[in-house]
Each structure stands twice: as structure tokens, then as C-alpha cells.
Image (cartoon, rainbow, N blue to C red):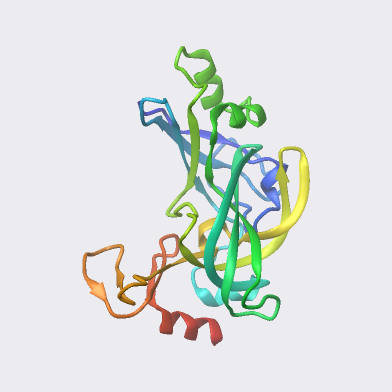
Length: 245
């Protein structure tokens, strides 16, 4: 069942988590708080467990429209496979930490063979876990008032044009060290720049050394690098040239 869009403020827990994560929002009747003004969030129930999907749109203080701009602010630029993921709730946010085993480094701060722990926004947690830190969110309040069974429900948060990080997939990540809040614990760790802007999926068929493009059924002979948030779809050779400029 579709719900009306609501406006929520992102709180201190995530306000400094990502480079350029603040917003120059055009939404009315909101106040700026720690660089992030507001997000537009819609949600709906999707299955028999009454799971909630939160689709979030965010305006950032600093825009990244190309690889060159991302490179300027990134402390690490690495390629590797995600070997592990962990998602947890924070104030008005779900965060996913993932371990990336580096098979190629484009910076001077990491090396091949490293396993890095990186954080990004979005992910899936249990409804009760999410509600613990987001009791004031309109969709949590509404769900608690309803008679729907939320005990076994999940909450999934997604950001516009950004796919959730998945174990077993290969990515190129642009990241910076930023403060992150897990529950009530503050820590500093690498975070993807502007959520999906700093996350590029490497689309490769390892068996045939080819890839099926996300937008077609054609099979291409070369690896491709996809970033839906930047509308970026180029072959690996072109991508690496852009990094090395």
C-alpha cells in the first residue's frame, strides 16, 4: 500500500558521514542541521511479512558529476570483491558496512591484498531494530499504531539511483574517512562519497570474460563499469584513463 511522501531531517548521526552528504534542498518548511537539510522519503509494504521499503531522495551540498571530481576528494580509490556485509540502524538512516578485498588500488593509501571495511548508506534491518532508533519517524509511528504484524518485518532503505551493496559483487569505491554512528557508538571509518556516487559496480562475466549490460541483453567483450547514480556506463579501459588523468 503506497503512502504519501513525508519529509524527514537527517540527524547528527549521519550528518558528517559522507563527503558532500549535506543538502541544498529546495524543500519548504525545513531547517538546515549539520549540512543536511532534508530528504523526501516514500515507503510501501511489499510482501506477506509486511516489509517496508524506504525510497529516499537526497540533495547534496557538493555535487559529483564525473570521475575527475570524485578523485579530488577521495582518500582511497580501490577495486575489489565484497566478502562480507553488515547493516544496522541509526537515526533516520540504515548503514551498511562491507568488507572489500582489494585486487587493484588507484591511490597511495591502500594496496592489493588489503581488506578494507567501508560504510555506505542504505541496507536492510529488522523493523524492531530500526524503530529503536527512529521512534519519531512517521512510518514507524503509523506501523506501530496499525495492527499489522511487524515482529518479523524488515526495513530496507534505498537511495535514489543507488543500488545496495551486495556480497560477492565487485566494485570500484571512492571513499573518505568520516565519523559514523552505530547505535550510540561513534567511530571513524572509510565511507563511500555521496552514497552511490562513489560506488561503481564492475559488471563482468568471469567465465567468458564478458559482461551483459544492465540496459540490454547484448554481451560485450570487455569489462564495464556501471554507476546508476552518475548514469555512468563505460568500459574498464576508459574508466581507468579517467582516474589516471
